[in-house]
Image (cartoon, rainbow, N blue to C red; front, side, top):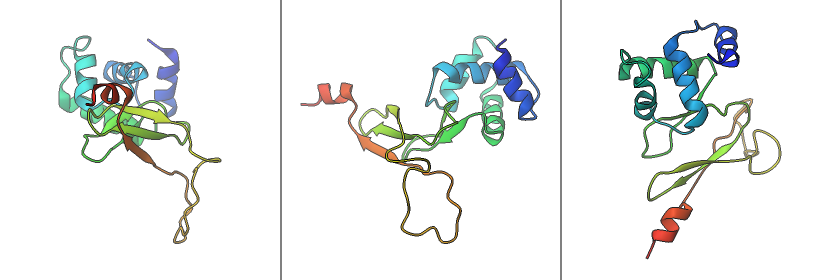
Length: 140
């Protein structure tokens, strides 16, 4: 077991379980994955797990701040481990591929809104839309 992930779970006040460890380990190499993709990745090593269990684990890890959930328009929620910066995303309008984009300008939250209505802004979510390289190459 990855001791860094174990320590992160404990620090977040969560018990270290095989399911939580499997989900975190899967997301280390599968950024921007849906719950179903995570379930497929962990089910071989955890044959008694269910899709509902994976959804519950993802919710717990998101609430604890150990993973991030993004929801590009028209897509199921996607999960990633890159959480300690204010990065953004680019989404292919044809195939749905998602990649990370570092902060657009300046320091977090990257953009200065014209008005915050009194809110103390800590994060900006920006999604860029376009065609990924593979879809561009396949386009007529």
